[in-house]
Image (tube, rainbow, N blue to C red; front, side, top):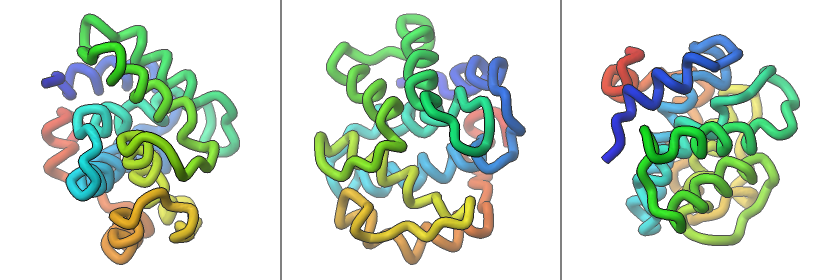
Length: 168
């Protein structure tokens, strides 16, 4: 298992935006909770989903349109591979692709990729976007909309996750 507090420390040392902003740590924590629920229902790789939650927006340089931020997040994960990120090649490739492609609108592919993308899309309410069920990848995510939407809109900060990450 990964030392998520250490990973968060490394991520936040180079994070350019406000930690508590729309793309910051509370968003990552909600993405984690969303993703683990989707993964539980679909059999996706929970460890990859967990790392995706932390890395997918970790290298944004602005809060608006930021082409390439997912790729930069994947590259950060790659730079930590072997020291803080411990995945075999196949699982790391899933993490990297999930980060790189998370804003491209894909709805088909490996169950782990789908869980990652749905986890992020379920949190779009934080920026005033209502997730459209047909743009979600899985039935599991569609079923989570009534639970995830108020959390996203209300900028819910998952205290237990944030505390475990050492940023609570």
